[in-house]
Image (tube, rainbow, N blue to C red; front, side, top):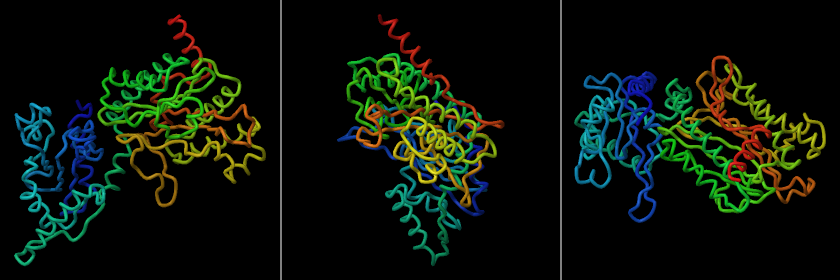
Length: 444
C-alpha cells in the first residue's frame, strides 16, 4: 500500500517534464528481479527513481514520459494479467490497473515494447535516460535507436542527444514533501521501537543475532517488509568495524553493543544507531566516550537549518570530538591544529551524516558549484558522529581500547531549524541505563 497519493506521483512527473527540453522523451526501467540462488528470487524491491515517479511495485515495467504528447504524456509498459502466473506469483496490475490505479495515460504490454517504443522515440531530439545503470536495458535501448537510424533514408529521425536523467530527477528527490516526511516518520517510529526492544533484550550469553532477531520482529510487526539496509549488531571490539555484518559474536558483560539498523516503509528508509552496555551499566571509560559522542550528536542539530550549509554540522562534530579527545588525554595538542592536521581521524574517520530518503544513502549533490550545498526545508539527513578506538591502538592506554560508539538520528530541515524523527530511542546514559534496568527487573 502506497501512503503517497497518486496525485503526488503525477505532480512529480509533471515537475520532471517541466525540466526537460521540448520534443524530448524520458525512459526509466523498473528494477529487475534478482535471483538469490537456483530458481529462488530475492524479495523484490522497486528501483527508487521508478518508485518516485510512479509508485508502481512490479518488475518488468518501463516508464516513458513524453512532454506535451497529444495522446498522453505518461506511458507505462508492464506485464499483462496472467491467471496462471498470478496463481503462483501474485496479482498483477495489467494494463487496465496501470491506468485505473496508477494513472498512466497509456499502458501497453511489456512484451510489445520492441514494436511500440521505437515509434515513441522517433522524432524526439533528446532522450533522458540513466546510462550505465542497467547494462541489459542499455543494450536494448541502443537496438531501438539503431532501428530508427536504419530508417533514416525513409525520413525517420533518430534522437541527436542522450542526457543523463539522474541530475534532474535526483535534485527533485532531495526535497521531501509533507507526505514523504510522514512516511519517513512512520519508518523512524517503527525502527525506534525495534531499537528499544533490542536494548531490553540484551543479556550476557546471548549472541548478536539474537538482538538482530528482535529488530526484525519489530520491523515486521510494524508493517515493514524489509530493513532499509543490512542491520549491524556489533558487540565489543566489533563496534570498531564500521560496516560490520557477521552479527554472530557472543554478548559479554562489560562490552558495549552498537546497533545500526532501520526499516523502510513504501521504500522510504530510516537509519538509527544506538550504543549501549550489554550489562546495562556503562564503565567509566565507556561513559566518557559515549557522552562525548552524544555531545557531538546534540551539537550538530544547532548547525542544521535553512541557510546553513551541508558541512556545518560535520565540522561542529569534529570540533566537539577533537576537544573532547584532548580532555580525555587521547589526543595531545591545540584543538585547531589537531583539526587542521586531521589528527582526530584515527578515532572519527567518517562524516557526520548523509542524505536520507528512498535510499538510505539518498541521492542529491552535497556540493553545488564547488560550495557545500545550502540546506532547505524538506531536506532529510542523518546525524551520526562516532568514536572508534581500535584494539591495537598502541597510542592510548589499554583501558580505552576496543570501545566503539556511534549515535545516529534522522532529521528533516524545517523553516526554523530541524526536526528529529528518531526521538523515540533513549540517548542519555541515565535513560539507557534506566530502560535496561527496568527490563531486567521485569524478567527477575
